[in-house]
Image (cartoon, rainbow, N blue to C red; front, side, top):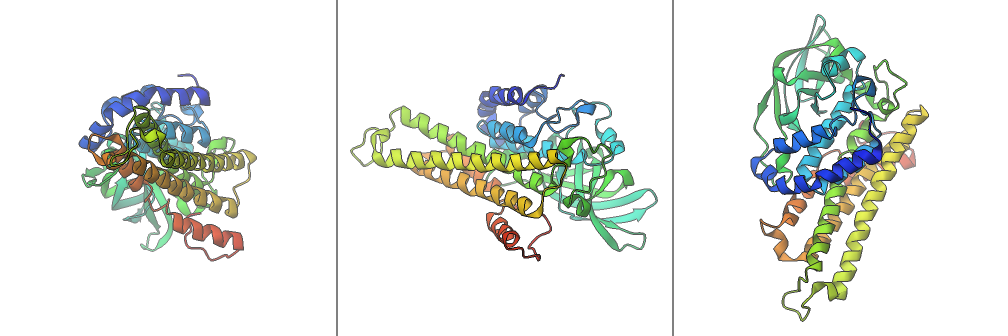
Length: 393
């Protein structure tokens, strides 16, 4: 498969929107992305976006990834979320030594990786690596992946923790505990991965502490994509589907207004003729645009600093975290306004607007997205306060 342009990749995502819309209710009821969607995404190459070009991937930039995933969310939030998480975890594999990358993609670029950063596990140092036991919740994409990159404490031979890291583990060494029963993003199948005394060789373990400051063990320092700042990447990608969900809600409400929907208990036979509707719709559209502008500004920040060869400074990294939370807030406000325009009928089970609302409400509560925490750490960075609220900047 030749390397497509950014415009070609976005066009492929757009072409899949009708299929994803058709299968969105099914994804929710089955609590997993339908295989028809996964196969279509794979055929379009949309799981290869962050796989190294030298191993058959497209190695695109983060602006393109975000434009693709936000476009997919116009069809199905869960499918867009899974595509996002697989692509960003694939990107983390590109930070590992080449030997680990070949473990994953040596037989071809279509192996998919899921991941959980939190080190909810124990590890024991042994000759040649670590033995790991743990449970990792919210593993989006785990039902469609062959590998997982999972947070672990790094210990020495005495058992003392020396660092925090992540470990690449094949899914064949893990089990999946069916725990994903939620109000929104039901189709992501974000279940719990379980390891029971699994051996992980040293070359498949990455120091998260060093990664946060851009110290990656990949030998391919000339590959711009894998010079991107770790935490800004891991945070911002979660905003792509949220911007797309807001766009989907806007399109749905505009289409319903175009069909002559009225306003109950008023003299407006057509809601579109009411100044209140027009004003609210304009405000919602402006919120959708604002979310997208901040999303792409932050993506351009990541790409520009990676291309420069200089690791993104802390203040800009903090601003990307701020932008991530800001996209979530504006998308939420836009959808809330659009649901109000559409009325109580928005919450009929047959109406896709209620699923869009629930998906965004759930996705925007991801811990790394948290707008309040993002504001606090950005404010501290602006003031030059060294003590921060999290190391994940």
